[in-house]
Image (cartoon, rainbow, N blue to C red; front, side, top):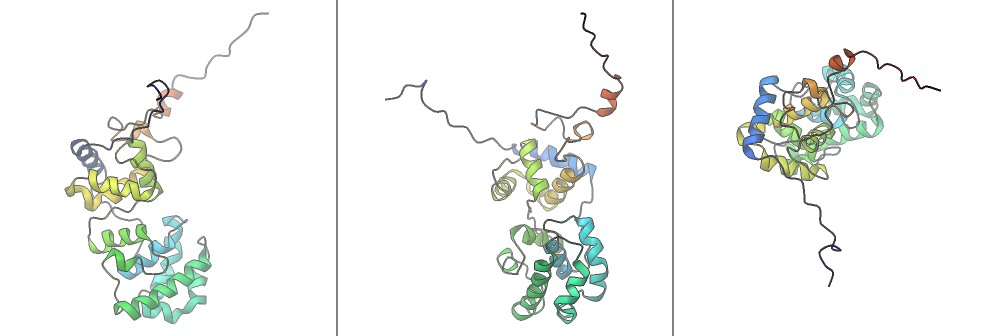
Length: 244
């Protein structure tokens, strides 16, 4: 029988924030951004579905540029189908994977008409049946269009949740489940927006702006980025002279 010194120690799963600490984190993010919303531009639930589906591997800014003119002429499934595949392609060519995305837009528009009487479904199980719509897209639509307290996990939220220790997880599904458990009910409706905006503008992938972070003291990230204004004020280091 192996003794304790030779046994392999199992790594404990990192703990999530407690409810009290999580509530403090969200309270600060809410004060910093009192009225958070998606940065994707849309005019109704249908155009939101299209915009979010187009946003995969693309920036919101890029999607908004493409959909600005598209939604002026096609803001319903009927109008999108009338525009046709080639018409959709012409409007979204600046977005990555535009050929596949155009096909999905046409296919989801047809399905909304055929199976949902022209209306965007209001359940996750129905939404994920639409071509090009995954769990993340469905959660965004449910939250933004229908006011449901869902938390869609993208790369920004995945990073913030793991880096801060709020809701660690190995994949988006684990993080989403952790966020559902950790996030107080009163903050669930805005949680997705607060976390994604914090990750997009403050807790960025490289050199997070820890010096300008409203939750820095709550965050478990050890390698916090120092304030560049303070470090630069120290002046350049003097060169080291070596004696012969």
